[in-house]
Length: 392
Image 1 (cartoon, rainbow, N blue to C red):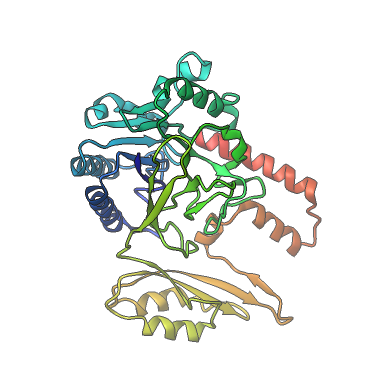
Image 2 (cartoon, helix red, strand yellow):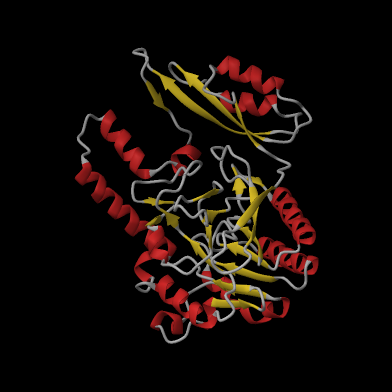
């Protein structure tokens, strides 16, 4: 069985109010081209199709048109799409029936029959003569039935009389993964999803296709078969790594998966100036002035300041790039005190994206107030409750 594994498209994502439709359309075009060349048996999109649970009509249309084109690139391919924590599971389920005409299976929520253990058919997708996909969307920890993955895999084992490959999908935070690029990581969760032990998936799978973490990687289990494919496009400036999809081949049940990554090009890369460390304001402006006029990019400036940046700093930067193809986004300011101790000053946008726990710790330190492990645990619990209520 040959798989294309992708996730975390985040369609509709904008960066500092800049629309990214052009980049996202180019990403979809490249994925369509890869499907046409590679001819996989299965296409897995493992959550966070959209950046918000209420995507615009234009974004939903872009997604629907892309699915049709990807299907036309390889009509015999089965497509399996599961919802992530950024998605509305209901939106994925609404058009489940008509999508089947194009070999597309959309799974937004756990079915009532699967929750009760009566019937797992909606989550076990047979790829005739090739294998099985066990498709599980994002589910909040408190709503996940006990040993759900284990029961699904046991059911597949009963059906898999020809020893075909078994692939499990999940959209979660697996303990031990590399969370580079995620600015919402906390002690017990990343992006609002609590850590999950890989052992809780059970056994009986040949490959676990993961979504949620943006850095492509295998989670170290000793078997090299549990993988995050990562984002095909960067979502933040801190995602300083290659972006790709993953092609996987599994010869039979129990065989070691073979894989390769296929990079996705970005016509508007996210660039930080300077590329390493921080520069003073005058040096940073020179770097921006010298950035090539004809190269499209989003620009973040890393600036160290001894006191405060000029109130006109952002306006100056915007003026510098006025006739360039690059787009100035924001200044990431780091204040250097007279005692040579560094603290970080933040823009409003950065404050909104900063981990609330780190902000609380910083406030406590600046105010010389205690913030021990008990307070940290209590703060984290309250934050998880708030995040859960927002998602629901």
